[in-house]
View 1 (cartoon, helix red, strand yellow):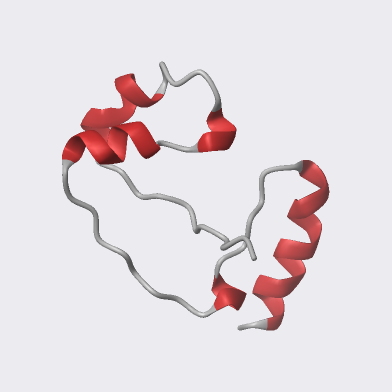
View 2: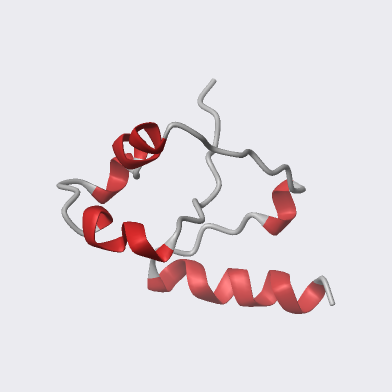
Length: 68
């Protein structure tokens, strides 16, 4: 079973290094590992919307409106 990973929140000073990553699909693992520390935050799955395509935007907007 593959675990879903939520988006990462990273410090702004790491942006130049993040922009050099060759494959965004693998995420910033190397950058996070080099920092030596990370904190995991737990949220209900319904709050972790993955909107990385135009097709995913409309269902995400509906879900957010429904949760208000």
